[in-house]
Picture 1: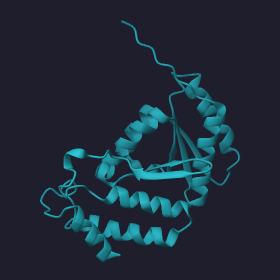
Picture 2 (picture 1 turned 45 degrees about the vertical axis):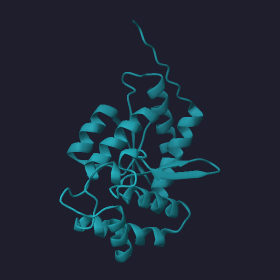
Picture 3 (picture 1 turned 90 degrees about the vertical axis):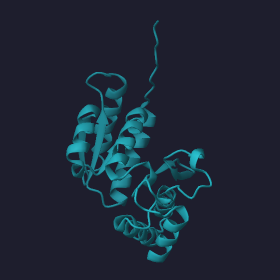
Picture 4 (picture 1 turned 30 degrees about the vertical axis):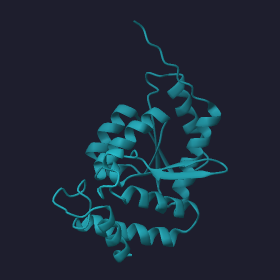
Length: 201
């Protein structure tokens, strides 16, 4: 009755993702990168990730570097999320933090995701395919639209990205022509919310 899992953290992989976080911060006028870890317990894997983070941070003196244990990060995200700017962490911790932060802003229906490599990038909604609401005009289109916004930023089309995001935010903030996951009293569906965003655009 024993189960064992193996965690693999490499210096090369750590450096790539941490370097990307700092470049992202610099390119997007962000002021701070917070590295989240569990090096107090996972001394080899999280410890290596933290060591590499400290090394990379020295190459970016214009970006503030902060390090937090993952447990404390969760608490601080709930109590004072504004202290964070860019967060970099390993896959499992990032998977947990992404759902936590989605809850802070209204749920998975609003959240895009990106997989960025050296030669290609993929942008998508982080929620699943939701086959239970397929064809029912209930799906929130915001996450897919925001994935498009992220893609436009990645391609250097910042003006177009900002216009689309502003239109989406206007509709969501108004809370009228939004899907039921954002406002249970709304009668709007996917199509109506999409049309409202186009009108706002």
